[in-house]
Image 1 (cartoon, rainbow, N blue to C red):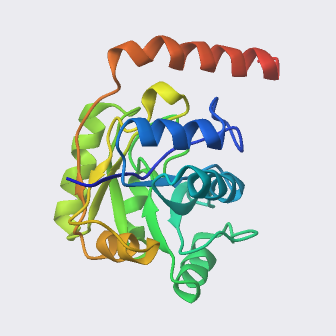
Image 2 (cartoon, rainbow, N blue to C red):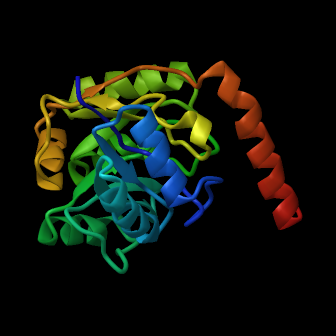
Length: 221
């Protein structure tokens, strides 16, 4: 079954892996498509697209995890953009103008700049809900699943990978082999992708912790 990773960070924001390493991991793990979703930038996506073309790797979905005035929102587009609006209402209008998809990221997870309980009243702004985030608490992921079902929203999953060891932990299953990025975006909108409910791999945890410590020390925290 074709699979796509829809939530991943690289050195273009706060990940430990370069876009090239992320693409190579995606190839190694047999992913059909990969969305690079660095914080507030499409730069990681642009670099990954170049690498994947050279390696004949997976289809790269240009992505960005935008920190809106309400919390983090995953943006998937047919092509990379220079910038995106931060206010959620403006981001929604911008997404429609550019044929992009908005997915609320880890909506109920504490400490992750999540939209939180406001998700319920902001449902119309989103095309889908990331109901399973491998780095999140399973019990709160379960609540996100219930929220999506209650409001009839399409569901996605994501590894939220910041290290190579996490790539493809919780990809989505695709209904077929996509020919273009637009195929995947439409499948997300129509609820045709199937989220996989998988926690972080135990052997990946030491790498996650090491990277977290390194980042904090680097910032002097």
